[in-house]
Length: 211
Image (cartoon, rainbow, N blue to C red):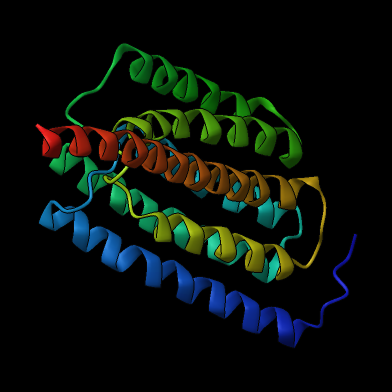
C-alpha cells in the first residue's frame, strides 16, 4: 500500500525520528560510560546486527525515507553494543541468556538464503525479539537498571518511522512494529515489577518500625 502522506510531511517525520534517535541514545551512552546504566551486552549485539540488516531489507521493500531512522539506529545500536561489551553491563549472565543469545545468532544466517526481503525481515524480527529476552530478564531482576523513558522514546520513534514509510507492507512494517510492541511490553513489565517490589517493601519497613 502506497502511503497517502505527502513527501514533505514524511520528510519532516523522518527528520524528527532521526532526531529522537540521537536524543535517546546520547544520554543512554553517556549513562553507560558513567556506570549509571547497565545494558545487557547480548541484547545489544543482536539488535545492532538485526537493525542494520533490516534497514537494507526496508530499502529493498521500497521503504523510502522512513527506512533511514532504522539505518541510523543500526549504526548507533552497534556503538551501544561496543560500550556494553566494554563495561560488561550485566555481570550476571545466566544459562538462559546464553541460550537465547545463541538462538538469536543462529537464526541470523537464514536471512541470506531467502530470495525476498519479507522472509528475511521475518527471521530478523524473530531474532530481534529473542535478543530482547536477556534484557527482559535483567529488567525483571534489576528494574532500576534501565531508563524506561529511553524505550518510550523509541516506541514513539518507531511510530513516526512507520508513518514516514513510502510503502506500507509487511516487509517495511514488521520490524518497527514488533520492536515497538516489545518496547511497550518491556516498559509495562518493569513498571509492574517496580510497583510489586515497592508494595512488598512498605510492609517490611512498617514491621521494622514497630519493633
